[in-house]
Length: 447
Image 1 (spheres, one colour):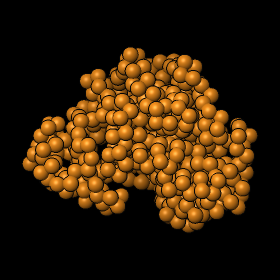
Image 2 (cartoon, helix red, strand yellow):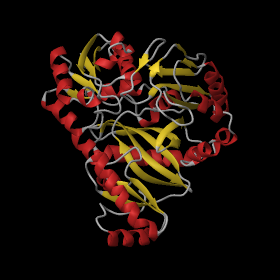
Image 3 (cartoon, rainbow, N blue to C red):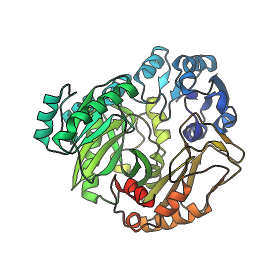
Image 4 (cartoon, rainbow, N blue to C red):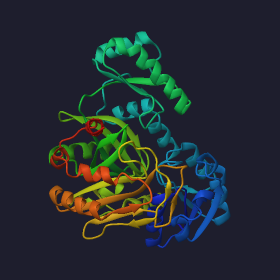
């Protein structure tokens, strides 16, 4: 097991990893920008190192500073959390060159899954069902028209190196295709430094289903069930739950088994999430995230397994602590992402939290690194906390969620709490009857 882990992140995920390390008796080092000097994870860590000014490029994305912090403090491993450098293959390679363990997959696996086209090829080879579309990057209009005609309209143009909804355009007809291709390519080049795009069949009313997987790096793989992340705004997840209200036990076992086998065959090490669009009983691979997910607590709630403990165990060479038959699913869990944003316009709302009170009681968990008097900086992601609720079934979970949202108090800034209070009383949400377009349509009607 590691002696000292450096946590290369901030906010609630840095605190989440820190807590896991403390439970395992591992010394912790956190890095921080000058803007985060008073953050909770900085206060609670065994050691902290300031690595630069507020802009991410000068601090949390500064690989050389983070490696220097490892060497100064004697950290023998780095946990990257999510975001920032968590899916940066170069970072993983550099740490390996300095004999520092990256708590995550190999740089090669990060590279494969970070390229959307190569990821799709790999998924197909591993027996994972994929969305019909181009086999690689599409370079001209003639080729685009041929592929679109083969798979049928509507189609979606996606950035090969993209994510977060950037470099994505829908073409409903052949007349839309030329401008969609040009716009997506231009956006991709500006956002990711790579203008390569590809074409896929555009599904009309799919759900977003993701499967939590783990590999030991030696040919063993397991899955921890699925999460439903269909409530989204601009391709950003807002509400996640497990298990999905849309799947039955047979579908759940089938897609989980496919994913676990694929991870084993790939020789993958650590945590990963294989993401799908699901429509009319069929799953279609869209991407794989080679890291811990924001929404991992809902999986922990229904399995009772600490996924960060598992990450650390696997990275240290200890292998998986569970076999597939050991993983049991209990009840239902929902996570709401509480952001420092206007609940209708989603405009960021940085500032000082004047009062912060979290709900409690059976089945309630809040992952947050903020406190009363904490000043939310304007430089980073707007997530300030996650409310995770667990119940014996979905009905009980929703009842607890409604109560917990009523108890949650954040004063001094605007948050998305009012949005969730509306959603928990909505009939479609109560019935689990929604798709990836539902939330944006709901918000449009409210304007």
